[in-house]
Length: 471
Image: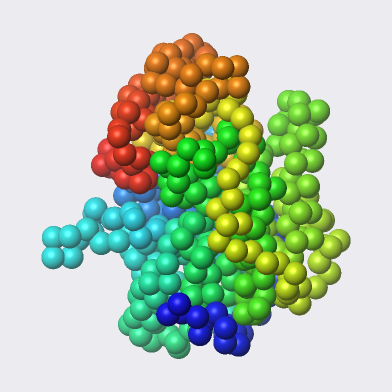
């Protein structure tokens, strides 16, 4: 009630910069030099360089990532691939600046500390470290190129957290002598509480925000966390939780309506598929799912979308080009959308299969092993898994195990005995693990998943207990 005036009054965010008018396809990925070069050269409109869900925040990773981005902004970043059979490695260089994707950096969320930097003995927020270091080294150069600095802000839960970012970014601008509002941001709506405060979040950041993004994977994770003790809100297996589920459809359409009313972009979500090179039929099925997802987004009114692999850029681009001839579609106001509280929390429908249960276990274990080894972005069964998708798998397992009466569709009870049996069988299922990312950490990740799944309370984030094990 105390923010009713923000919702009812007519106001708009500050005008969008020219570089961010057209964001129809964005590619995301970690900040290693090869990824940065390939993404900036990819033909996407935007590259989101990620210090969050696709980066394991080992100190060496963070510093190397910042160094790579400094090189990218200066234009002198290069990379040499490994030599093969005595031949020199492949050389990677950047295209001319006007042919590159626009760079947006995603710092870590408020929940992650940076233990290597302390003020008065206390670790600082990882996101503040990421944003401040990037701005300090690159803001002037980017401003001269009319390219920012630009940030994607993750995991916000409230207008108060948005206001905290506003205070921090205004302070950074003041320290660096930048005009107020020079730093632009896009906010990920990827928690259930934030879906109820989209107007307020836009308003708190109105001098610098350019859009909201449907962070669908973390949003599903947040839904599970919010309703972890509600038997009537237990999600089916992950593969059945698509954007056609009523609660996800409602949230995405509300985001479009809210953003376009306020003059901001409404960005669509991630396509996590990666090409299946050895199986043409399976690859076509996967790409058909991508096309259907992007068609749903553009016809609903989204202004752009995310992909995790360069091969998906032309697929998404073609669909948005066909259905969105203008740089964006802010004119699609979606006044037909009437979403209330009940629609945003509508109970999902579906089943839990043995394959779905075992798949969640495998994704958790393999992703966590790679993360502990310093790799935050891992291809598993032709999907690019990051912390968000792994969190869905982990939180689903916990909810299934701790909600009485849950069964697989074949009648098998979902209990700790089933989890233990699945974990015991996993090494056999995986076979030769030598080539898997983080293979040496697999026993540790199996033990950690077993421990987290047994706890009486759902651990907030997988990365919190795991961070203590990183260098």
